[in-house]
Every structure is written in structure tokens, then in C-alpha cells.
Length: 84
Image (cartoon, rainbow, N blue to C red):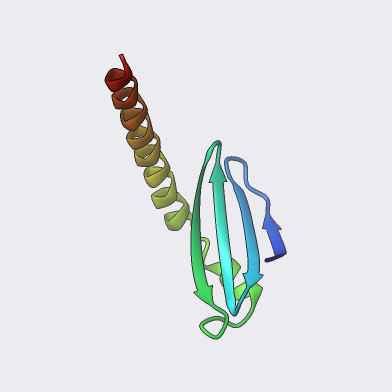
């Protein structure tokens, strides 16, 4: 997997990789990450992929990160209750 671009952002670490005929957009926030895979024949290069990273996408990504954290905390708390 080859890193082709890192996009500066105040909140997230955003990276675009190219691997096996796909672009992979990886968005990280703390211990969580989300990835999006796009076939390289579906876009016209890395600049086209970068245009897909809109404010709306980032807003929705944040909502999913919040849900992921809640799910993880719930699972972790339930694990601790079972072990007691």
C-alpha cells in the first residue's frame, strides 16, 4: 500500500493510499479509523479522490466516530461486568 497524499486537517488524520487497483481514503480520530475504497477506474486520479472529501462527508464521519466510541465503551463496560 503506497501513501499518495496526506491531507492536513485540524481534527483528523486523512491519508489517501493506492493499492491493488483502488484508492483508499483513511480517516483517523484518536484510536478509531474509517476507510473508504474507491476503484481507480471510478475517478480521474488522486485530485478527484480528494474532491470527494467534502464538509458533508467529514460531518457524517464525525457522527460515525461518536457512534463507534459509544459502541466500544458499551462493549468494554459489558465485558467488565461479565468478568466480575
